Amino acid sequence: MEKHILILAATHDFLWKFERENVKILQGMGYVVHYAANMKEPHYISHQEQFRQMGVRAHHIEIARSPFLVQDNQKALRQLLGLIRRYPIRAIHCHTPVGGLLGRLAGRFCRARKLVVVYTAHGFHFYKGAPLWNRSAYYWAEKQLARDTDVLIVINKEDYSTAQGFRLKRGGRLYQIPGVGLDRFRFHPLSDEKKRECRQRLGIGERDFFLISVGELNENKNHKVVLEALAKMKRKGEDLSQVKYGICGDGLFRDRIRRWAIELGLKDTVILYGYRTDIPQAIGCADAMAFPSQREGLGMAGLEALAMGIPVLAADNRGTREYMKPGQNGFVCRHDDVDGFVKGIETIRRLTPEQRKTMQTRCRDSVRRFDKERANAIMQAIYADVDRRIDQNSHGK
Image (cartoon, rainbow, N blue to C red; front, side, top):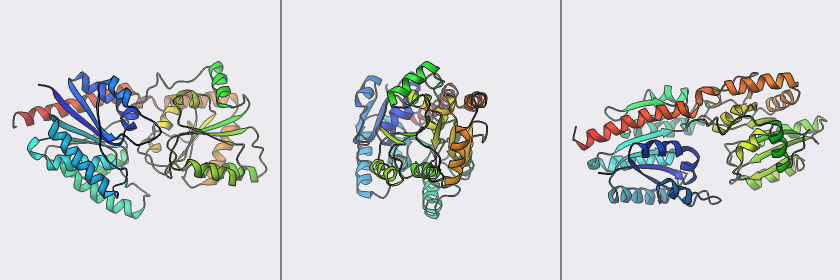
Protein backbone atom coordinates (compact mmCIF):
# COMPACT_ATOMS: atom_id res chain seq x y z
CA MET A 1 0.00 0.00 0.00
CA GLU A 2 1.34 3.42 -0.98
CA LYS A 3 2.24 5.84 1.80
CA HIS A 4 1.18 9.45 1.22
CA ILE A 5 2.41 12.55 3.05
CA LEU A 6 1.41 16.18 2.52
CA ILE A 7 3.77 19.14 2.79
CA LEU A 8 1.87 22.38 3.42
CA ALA A 9 3.02 26.01 3.13
CA ALA A 10 1.57 29.40 2.24
CA THR A 11 3.48 30.13 -1.00
CA HIS A 12 4.36 27.69 -3.77
CA ASP A 13 8.07 28.64 -3.90
CA PHE A 14 8.60 27.47 -0.31
CA LEU A 15 9.12 23.85 -1.28
CA TRP A 16 11.59 24.72 -4.03
CA LYS A 17 13.61 26.98 -1.74
CA PHE A 18 13.58 24.95 1.47
CA GLU A 19 12.08 21.46 1.16
CA ARG A 20 13.79 19.70 -1.75
CA GLU A 21 16.07 17.70 0.53
CA ASN A 22 13.11 16.63 2.67
CA VAL A 23 11.25 15.50 -0.46
CA LYS A 24 14.22 13.29 -1.40
CA ILE A 25 14.33 11.79 2.08
CA LEU A 26 10.59 11.03 2.08
CA GLN A 27 10.64 9.56 -1.42
CA GLY A 28 13.60 7.41 -0.39
CA MET A 29 11.42 6.07 2.42
CA GLY A 30 8.74 5.12 -0.09
CA TYR A 31 6.37 8.06 0.37
CA VAL A 32 4.25 9.71 -2.29
CA VAL A 33 4.77 13.42 -1.59
CA HIS A 34 1.94 15.92 -2.04
CA TYR A 35 2.45 19.67 -1.80
CA ALA A 36 -0.37 22.12 -1.03
CA ALA A 37 0.20 25.88 -1.27
CA ASN A 38 -1.06 28.98 -3.03
CA MET A 39 0.35 28.25 -6.48
CA LYS A 40 -0.33 31.85 -7.55
CA GLU A 41 2.05 33.33 -4.97
CA PRO A 42 4.54 34.76 -5.53
CA HIS A 43 3.26 35.81 -8.92
CA TYR A 44 6.67 36.39 -10.52
CA ILE A 45 7.92 32.78 -10.52
CA SER A 46 6.55 29.29 -11.02
CA HIS A 47 8.07 25.93 -10.11
CA GLN A 48 5.22 23.73 -11.33
CA GLU A 49 7.37 22.01 -13.95
CA GLN A 50 10.13 21.34 -11.41
CA PHE A 51 7.56 19.80 -9.06
CA ARG A 52 6.44 17.44 -11.82
CA GLN A 53 10.04 16.44 -12.52
CA MET A 54 10.58 15.80 -8.80
CA GLY A 55 7.53 13.55 -8.69
CA VAL A 56 5.70 15.87 -6.27
CA ARG A 57 1.92 16.10 -6.62
CA ALA A 58 1.19 19.81 -6.33
CA HIS A 59 -2.23 21.17 -5.29
CA HIS A 60 -3.44 24.77 -5.32
CA ILE A 61 -5.33 26.01 -2.27
CA GLU A 62 -6.42 29.57 -1.50
CA ILE A 63 -4.15 29.92 1.51
CA ALA A 64 -3.07 33.49 2.35
CA ARG A 65 0.08 34.56 4.15
CA SER A 66 -1.84 36.67 6.63
CA PRO A 67 -3.96 34.88 9.26
CA PHE A 68 -6.30 37.87 9.13
CA LEU A 69 -7.49 37.07 5.59
CA VAL A 70 -10.10 34.84 7.17
CA GLN A 71 -12.27 34.10 4.11
CA ASP A 72 -9.32 32.92 2.00
CA ASN A 73 -7.97 30.75 4.79
CA GLN A 74 -11.36 29.25 5.61
CA LYS A 75 -11.65 28.25 1.97
CA ALA A 76 -8.09 26.89 2.05
CA LEU A 77 -8.95 24.76 5.10
CA ARG A 78 -11.95 23.27 3.28
CA GLN A 79 -9.74 22.55 0.26
CA LEU A 80 -7.13 20.98 2.54
CA LEU A 81 -9.71 18.71 4.17
CA GLY A 82 -10.88 17.73 0.68
CA LEU A 83 -7.33 16.70 -0.26
CA ILE A 84 -7.04 14.57 2.86
CA ARG A 85 -10.31 12.83 2.03
CA ARG A 86 -9.32 12.31 -1.61
CA TYR A 87 -5.91 10.76 -1.01
CA PRO A 88 -4.66 8.24 1.60
CA ILE A 89 -2.64 10.93 3.37
CA ARG A 90 -1.34 9.78 6.74
CA ALA A 91 0.82 12.74 7.76
CA ILE A 92 1.03 16.49 7.24
CA HIS A 93 4.30 18.41 7.50
CA CYS A 94 3.29 22.05 7.71
CA HIS A 95 5.40 25.18 7.40
CA THR A 96 4.90 28.96 7.63
CA PRO A 97 2.60 30.46 10.29
CA VAL A 98 -0.66 30.08 8.37
CA GLY A 99 0.37 26.68 7.02
CA GLY A 100 1.03 25.64 10.61
CA LEU A 101 -2.40 26.91 11.66
CA LEU A 102 -4.36 25.20 8.88
CA GLY A 103 -2.36 21.98 8.99
CA ARG A 104 -2.92 21.50 12.68
CA LEU A 105 -6.59 22.40 12.43
CA ALA A 106 -6.90 19.81 9.67
CA GLY A 107 -5.32 17.26 11.99
CA ARG A 108 -7.84 18.16 14.68
CA PHE A 109 -10.80 17.86 12.30
CA CYS A 110 -9.55 14.53 10.89
CA ARG A 111 -9.02 12.69 14.15
CA ALA A 112 -10.67 9.57 12.73
CA ARG A 113 -7.90 9.45 10.08
CA LYS A 114 -5.27 9.61 12.88
CA LEU A 115 -3.03 11.98 10.94
CA VAL A 116 0.49 12.53 12.22
CA VAL A 117 0.99 16.30 12.31
CA VAL A 118 4.50 17.79 12.01
CA TYR A 119 5.14 21.51 12.22
CA THR A 120 8.44 23.22 11.48
CA ALA A 121 8.55 26.71 12.98
CA HIS A 122 11.01 28.65 10.85
CA GLY A 123 10.92 31.37 13.51
CA PHE A 124 8.00 31.96 15.85
CA HIS A 125 6.31 35.33 15.30
CA PHE A 126 6.80 36.07 18.99
CA TYR A 127 10.39 36.62 20.08
CA LYS A 128 12.45 38.80 22.39
CA GLY A 129 11.83 42.39 21.36
CA ALA A 130 8.72 41.60 19.30
CA PRO A 131 5.67 43.90 19.45
CA LEU A 132 3.28 43.20 22.33
CA TRP A 133 0.65 41.87 19.92
CA ASN A 134 3.07 39.19 18.66
CA ARG A 135 4.16 38.27 22.16
CA SER A 136 0.56 37.80 23.28
CA ALA A 137 -1.69 36.72 20.37
CA TYR A 138 0.85 34.65 18.42
CA TYR A 139 2.24 33.06 21.57
CA TRP A 140 -1.27 32.08 22.72
CA ALA A 141 -2.09 30.64 19.28
CA GLU A 142 1.09 28.57 19.11
CA LYS A 143 0.60 27.28 22.64
CA GLN A 144 -2.93 26.12 21.82
CA LEU A 145 -1.98 24.59 18.47
CA ALA A 146 0.87 22.68 20.09
CA ARG A 147 -1.79 20.36 21.55
CA ASP A 148 -2.53 19.22 17.99
CA THR A 149 1.14 18.68 17.11
CA ASP A 150 2.86 15.28 17.16
CA VAL A 151 6.29 16.59 16.15
CA LEU A 152 7.42 20.20 16.60
CA ILE A 153 10.65 21.28 14.90
CA VAL A 154 12.45 24.58 15.58
CA ILE A 155 15.64 26.04 14.12
CA ASN A 156 17.16 28.24 16.83
CA LYS A 157 17.90 28.14 20.55
CA GLU A 158 15.45 30.85 21.57
CA ASP A 159 12.51 29.07 19.95
CA TYR A 160 13.63 25.72 21.38
CA SER A 161 13.67 27.19 24.88
CA THR A 162 10.19 28.64 24.40
CA ALA A 163 8.75 25.47 22.86
CA GLN A 164 9.89 23.40 25.84
CA GLY A 165 7.04 25.09 27.72
CA PHE A 166 4.41 23.91 25.21
CA ARG A 167 2.25 20.87 25.80
CA LEU A 168 2.31 18.77 22.63
CA LYS A 169 -0.11 16.02 21.67
CA ARG A 170 0.28 12.94 23.85
CA GLY A 171 3.64 11.34 23.03
CA GLY A 172 4.72 14.40 21.03
CA ARG A 173 8.39 15.26 20.47
CA LEU A 174 10.30 18.53 20.15
CA TYR A 175 13.38 18.73 17.92
CA GLN A 176 15.89 21.43 17.00
CA ILE A 177 17.58 21.26 13.59
CA PRO A 178 20.37 23.41 12.06
CA GLY A 179 18.00 25.00 9.56
CA VAL A 180 17.17 23.39 6.22
CA GLY A 181 20.82 22.62 5.55
CA LEU A 182 23.58 24.66 3.95
CA ASP A 183 24.79 23.44 0.56
CA ARG A 184 28.51 24.18 0.85
CA PHE A 185 29.13 22.51 -2.53
CA ARG A 186 26.98 25.20 -4.17
CA PHE A 187 28.03 28.04 -1.88
CA HIS A 188 31.82 28.19 -1.81
CA PRO A 189 34.41 30.91 -2.50
CA LEU A 190 34.78 31.94 -6.13
CA SER A 191 38.11 32.18 -7.91
CA ASP A 192 39.40 35.68 -8.70
CA GLU A 193 38.68 35.08 -12.38
CA LYS A 194 35.11 34.00 -11.67
CA LYS A 195 34.59 37.03 -9.40
CA ARG A 196 35.70 39.39 -12.18
CA GLU A 197 33.39 37.66 -14.64
CA CYS A 198 30.39 37.85 -12.27
CA ARG A 199 31.05 41.49 -11.40
CA GLN A 200 31.21 42.41 -15.07
CA ARG A 201 27.88 40.69 -15.67
CA LEU A 202 26.32 42.61 -12.74
CA GLY A 203 27.77 45.96 -13.82
CA ILE A 204 30.23 46.19 -10.90
CA GLY A 205 33.74 47.57 -11.41
CA GLU A 206 36.82 45.66 -10.23
CA ARG A 207 37.67 48.44 -7.77
CA ASP A 208 34.11 49.00 -6.55
CA PHE A 209 33.13 48.08 -2.99
CA PHE A 210 30.16 45.80 -3.64
CA LEU A 211 27.61 45.37 -0.85
CA ILE A 212 24.78 42.92 -1.51
CA SER A 213 21.44 41.92 0.06
CA VAL A 214 19.41 38.87 -0.94
CA GLY A 215 15.78 38.20 -0.07
CA GLU A 216 12.19 39.20 -0.58
CA LEU A 217 11.59 42.94 -0.68
CA ASN A 218 9.35 43.51 2.32
CA GLU A 219 9.22 45.46 5.56
CA ASN A 220 10.93 42.80 7.66
CA LYS A 221 14.02 42.62 5.43
CA ASN A 222 14.62 46.25 6.42
CA HIS A 223 16.66 47.46 3.42
CA LYS A 224 15.94 51.07 4.32
CA VAL A 225 18.42 51.11 7.22
CA VAL A 226 21.24 50.28 4.77
CA LEU A 227 20.07 53.04 2.44
CA GLU A 228 20.05 55.48 5.35
CA ALA A 229 23.55 54.38 6.35
CA LEU A 230 24.86 54.97 2.83
CA ALA A 231 23.10 58.35 2.69
CA LYS A 232 24.71 59.34 6.01
CA MET A 233 28.14 58.37 4.68
CA LYS A 234 27.51 60.57 1.66
CA ARG A 235 26.44 63.50 3.84
CA LYS A 236 29.67 63.10 5.82
CA GLY A 237 31.56 63.73 2.60
CA GLU A 238 32.54 60.15 1.79
CA ASP A 239 33.00 59.40 -1.89
CA LEU A 240 30.46 56.74 -2.89
CA SER A 241 31.35 56.76 -6.58
CA GLN A 242 32.99 53.36 -6.12
CA VAL A 243 30.38 51.93 -3.74
CA LYS A 244 27.50 49.80 -5.08
CA TYR A 245 24.64 48.31 -3.10
CA GLY A 246 22.98 45.51 -5.04
CA ILE A 247 19.62 44.13 -3.89
CA CYS A 248 18.54 40.75 -5.26
CA GLY A 249 14.88 39.85 -4.87
CA ASP A 250 11.37 41.00 -5.61
CA GLY A 251 8.31 41.86 -3.55
CA LEU A 252 5.87 44.52 -2.43
CA PHE A 253 8.59 46.99 -1.41
CA ARG A 254 10.34 47.11 -4.81
CA ASP A 255 8.95 50.49 -5.91
CA ARG A 256 9.28 51.87 -2.39
CA ILE A 257 12.97 50.97 -2.22
CA ARG A 258 13.55 52.52 -5.63
CA ARG A 259 11.86 55.72 -4.44
CA TRP A 260 13.87 55.80 -1.21
CA ALA A 261 17.11 55.43 -3.16
CA ILE A 262 16.22 58.43 -5.33
CA GLU A 263 15.06 60.55 -2.38
CA LEU A 264 18.29 59.80 -0.47
CA GLY A 265 20.48 60.71 -3.42
CA LEU A 266 21.60 57.11 -4.00
CA LYS A 267 20.36 56.62 -7.55
CA ASP A 268 23.89 55.81 -8.79
CA THR A 269 24.73 53.64 -5.77
CA VAL A 270 21.73 51.29 -5.44
CA ILE A 271 21.02 48.59 -8.02
CA LEU A 272 17.77 46.61 -7.89
CA TYR A 273 18.52 43.32 -9.64
CA GLY A 274 15.09 41.77 -9.12
CA TYR A 275 14.54 38.03 -8.80
CA ARG A 276 17.66 36.10 -9.85
CA THR A 277 18.60 32.47 -10.27
CA ASP A 278 22.39 33.05 -10.04
CA ILE A 279 22.48 33.90 -6.33
CA PRO A 280 25.73 32.00 -5.52
CA GLN A 281 27.58 33.99 -8.18
CA ALA A 282 26.02 37.31 -7.09
CA ILE A 283 26.93 36.72 -3.43
CA GLY A 284 30.35 35.29 -4.22
CA CYS A 285 31.58 38.35 -6.09
CA ALA A 286 30.51 40.78 -3.34
CA ASP A 287 32.76 42.35 -0.72
CA ALA A 288 30.15 42.05 2.03
CA MET A 289 26.53 41.13 2.61
CA ALA A 290 24.08 43.45 4.36
CA PHE A 291 21.56 41.35 6.31
CA PRO A 292 19.48 43.89 8.28
CA SER A 293 16.29 41.84 8.91
CA GLN A 294 14.23 42.79 11.93
CA ARG A 295 13.63 39.08 12.56
CA GLU A 296 14.98 35.80 11.20
CA GLY A 297 14.35 32.25 12.31
CA LEU A 298 17.90 31.51 11.16
CA GLY A 299 18.62 33.33 7.92
CA MET A 300 19.91 31.19 5.06
CA ALA A 301 21.17 34.18 3.05
CA GLY A 302 23.57 35.06 5.86
CA LEU A 303 24.80 31.46 6.13
CA GLU A 304 25.27 31.22 2.36
CA ALA A 305 27.36 34.39 2.27
CA LEU A 306 29.57 33.18 5.12
CA ALA A 307 30.05 29.82 3.39
CA MET A 308 31.45 31.75 0.41
CA GLY A 309 33.84 33.66 2.64
CA ILE A 310 31.83 36.88 2.41
CA PRO A 311 31.60 38.83 5.70
CA VAL A 312 28.09 39.71 6.87
CA LEU A 313 26.86 42.99 8.32
CA ALA A 314 23.87 41.68 10.26
CA ALA A 315 21.09 42.96 12.44
CA ASP A 316 21.03 41.34 15.87
CA ASN A 317 18.18 38.84 16.04
CA ARG A 318 17.63 35.28 17.32
CA GLY A 319 18.59 33.85 13.92
CA THR A 320 21.87 35.67 13.36
CA ARG A 321 22.86 35.04 16.98
CA GLU A 322 23.18 31.36 16.02
CA TYR A 323 26.22 31.99 13.82
CA MET A 324 27.43 35.61 13.85
CA LYS A 325 30.71 36.27 15.66
CA PRO A 326 31.21 40.06 15.70
CA GLY A 327 34.63 41.10 14.48
CA GLN A 328 35.41 37.58 13.24
CA ASN A 329 32.95 36.81 10.45
CA GLY A 330 31.35 40.26 10.19
CA PHE A 331 29.65 42.84 12.36
CA VAL A 332 26.37 42.99 14.27
CA CYS A 333 24.19 45.89 15.38
CA ARG A 334 20.55 46.68 16.14
CA HIS A 335 18.25 46.55 13.14
CA ASP A 336 17.53 50.29 13.44
CA ASP A 337 21.10 51.42 14.24
CA VAL A 338 22.07 53.52 11.23
CA ASP A 339 25.40 54.49 12.82
CA GLY A 340 26.13 50.83 13.50
CA PHE A 341 25.65 49.96 9.84
CA VAL A 342 27.81 52.92 8.81
CA LYS A 343 30.58 51.69 11.10
CA GLY A 344 30.27 48.14 9.79
CA ILE A 345 30.42 49.19 6.14
CA GLU A 346 33.39 51.47 6.75
CA THR A 347 35.26 48.82 8.75
CA ILE A 348 34.85 46.15 6.07
CA ARG A 349 35.85 48.61 3.33
CA ARG A 350 39.10 49.35 5.14
CA LEU A 351 40.20 45.78 5.74
CA THR A 352 43.69 45.05 4.45
CA PRO A 353 44.14 42.09 2.06
CA GLU A 354 45.60 40.07 4.95
CA GLN A 355 42.71 40.94 7.27
CA ARG A 356 40.19 40.13 4.55
CA LYS A 357 41.81 36.72 3.96
CA THR A 358 41.72 35.92 7.68
CA MET A 359 38.07 36.95 7.91
CA GLN A 360 37.22 34.85 4.86
CA THR A 361 38.57 31.75 6.62
CA ARG A 362 36.67 32.57 9.81
CA CYS A 363 33.48 33.11 7.80
CA ARG A 364 33.67 29.62 6.32
CA ASP A 365 34.60 27.97 9.61
CA SER A 366 31.66 29.58 11.41
CA VAL A 367 29.00 27.77 9.34
CA ARG A 368 30.32 24.20 9.10
CA ARG A 369 27.82 22.89 11.66
CA PHE A 370 24.93 24.02 9.43
CA ASP A 371 26.00 21.72 6.58
CA LYS A 372 23.11 20.04 4.75
CA GLU A 373 24.49 16.54 5.39
CA ARG A 374 24.09 17.12 9.12
CA ALA A 375 20.62 18.65 8.69
CA ASN A 376 19.57 15.75 6.44
CA ALA A 377 20.76 13.16 8.97
CA ILE A 378 18.62 14.78 11.67
CA MET A 379 15.60 15.01 9.35
CA GLN A 380 16.06 11.36 8.38
CA ALA A 381 15.76 10.46 12.08
CA ILE A 382 12.73 12.73 12.53
CA TYR A 383 10.94 11.20 9.53
CA ALA A 384 11.76 7.73 10.89
CA ASP A 385 9.95 8.83 14.07
CA VAL A 386 7.01 10.05 11.94
CA ASP A 387 6.98 6.75 10.04
CA ARG A 388 6.79 4.80 13.33
CA ARG A 389 3.88 6.97 14.46
CA ILE A 390 2.03 6.34 11.18
CA ASP A 391 2.60 2.61 11.57
CA GLN A 392 1.34 2.68 15.16
CA ASN A 393 -1.77 4.60 14.10
CA SER A 394 -2.41 2.12 11.29
CA HIS A 395 -2.32 -0.76 13.75
CA GLY A 396 -4.48 1.05 16.29
CA LYS A 397 -1.77 1.31 18.94
